[in-house]
Amino acid sequence: MIIAAEAIPDNLSVKTLYPKSRDVIKGLKRHGVNIISYACDGTQVERSIQDTLVFDAKNALSIRLPDPDPEEDNDYVIRIPMFGPSGGSPVVMVQDSKHALKTFRNNLFSGARALVLGNHITMYSQVWKIAFGDPPGPIYR
Amino acid sequence: MVRSREPSFPVFISERCFVNTQSYIIALNYTGPVALACDDTKLHPSLQVYWDASISSHLLVGTTVHEPIVVVDPTVLGELLEKHKDNMATKVFTMFYIDSIHC
Image 1 (cartoon, each protein chain N blue to C red):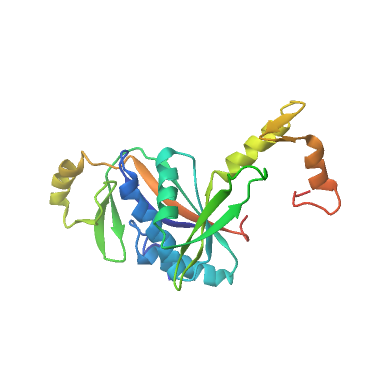
Image 2: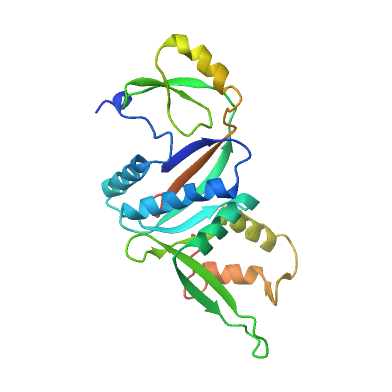
């Protein structure tokens, strides 16, 4: 469902667009609409809006993913802003999930023997396990 | 209510956007999580007049001016078109939501 639309010129800055996004999130929360995520595509301006939403929010959750190397101290910290009445509830920033899905699918089935992601590899057999393994995974069959 | 007499979609981000969404979700009897998303879409820039039933007036749309431009009578239309021809909108900034019923 479309919530809001506004005619804009080509050259709007983050400073002008950020309050629009923020007001829509806050307005919906105020009306009891249970927003849990905010998605946009990967353009510089829209990602900057998300950054501003994350760091300008009064309340936020902080989730720490410890560095797997015990000798290193590069923990990964994710900040999830909270919006809405009485302290708010978390709204996760996401980008272009459909595009990510398509890219992962294309990469996995590209014919590469061993696709490398950081310290791991991804393989067709893993997808097969998610689809047909036990316990069954979330892939629609 | 006859559809054509219902107030049209809000032209600006306003309280009415949220109330519309709220009543839609209540009508669905849905209380689960909702995903919000936004994107721009390109426009063919143009200035148009449309009838807004909620205020019983003709409005000029297609500009980047952030308030309703009322066309009080046909004689001022030319003047308004001339005045706003340099700030025609080139994009629409759209926010929408997805719930798990419609996924």
